[in-house]
Amino acid sequence: INFKTMSNFLPSSASIKQVLLKIYTCKEPFELYVVDRKFKRRLGTYFVEKQKINIYAKGMDGHIIMEVAIHEYAHHIHHTEQYTWDVRRKDRSHGEKFWRIYSALMAKAIYKDIFKDDLICDIITQ
Image 1 (cartoon, rainbow, N blue to C red):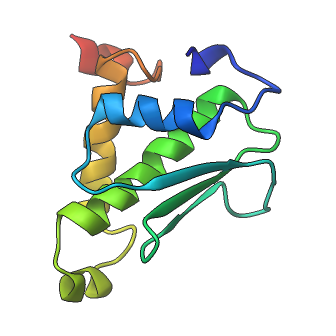
Image 2 (cartoon, rainbow, N blue to C red):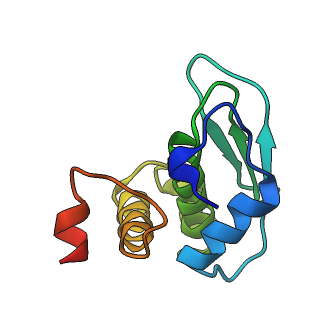
């Protein structure tokens, strides 16, 4: 699936999940839903207790959908693989540990040519 060229087309939840698992195979299962809805301030949500990702994809192109999916997937990995429940609740959801996980996922996605970011692509692929 070429997410870079998609527009006005909602990819399936299964296809996005498949791509995320190509970037990194997480240790805990998760659900992923592409929702044909748009919010003013939210592109995606990760529900910790349900281990569920929602991507609010109405009006987004495939490139942005994939970026949001990677972001929410980083939350899943952050909450399920890095910490015990007590520590998770005290850690900031967008703290340093989260951004390190997100950066690693994004770098791997760029390296595997799953995601394209012209600003940093040459740094990662050389």
